[in-house]
Image 1 (cartoon, rainbow, N blue to C red):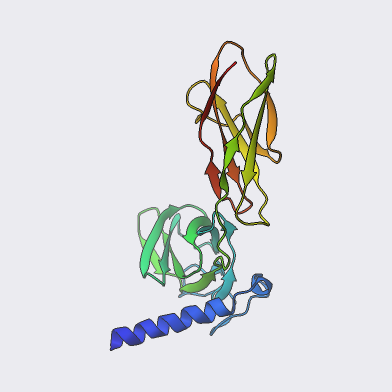
Image 2 (image 1 turned 180 degrees about the horizontal axis):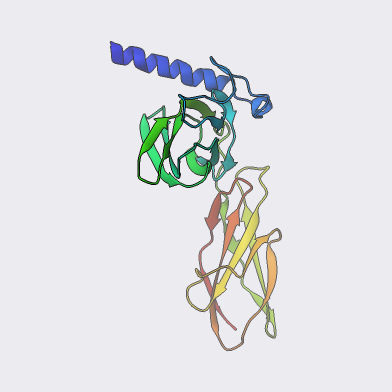
Length: 240
């Protein structure tokens, strides 16, 4: 019974954050709060004050990594006598707790799953490994992706054409999401078509590259949408 009540309470807390998360509220100064004040969490004397993300921030955006994760920047005040810090964070959906140790500044970045509620705290560590008191605990909701974005379709390669050493590569790119914008990276090498790209961030579906004659080349195209979803074409082989 206690387990059921705990689950219902967590589910209600999660839904409260998610329902209130919108594009308009995703600003540090304007974010609404649930429960306590949106100001920094103040711990006991000698502990760090957590400054970002704000406590009960219901729409932390972070920096988008992909459709599943974002990179969140954590900040806190310095503690006298602390030479490093440990940051402990908990995914309140899975109750998974992790600690990032030996942080030598008052800021750090962590990649987290989107659409989750997190709790975090910081502890100062002195040079002789004495641990200070832990800060208070702050909670925030990391914005999810309400509209799941699809991965671009693999590009279809056309046979290269050349004029002397100048080779024109062409392909066709397509994305299932009609409003997505695609950019391309082209890989051309004599090994397997999977070495470093020779050009990236292309917005057109053709490009010209100068190559050595008398050699066999392998090439492929990586298609990427604005949400950083990517796909690779098959590798094609040609001789010049």
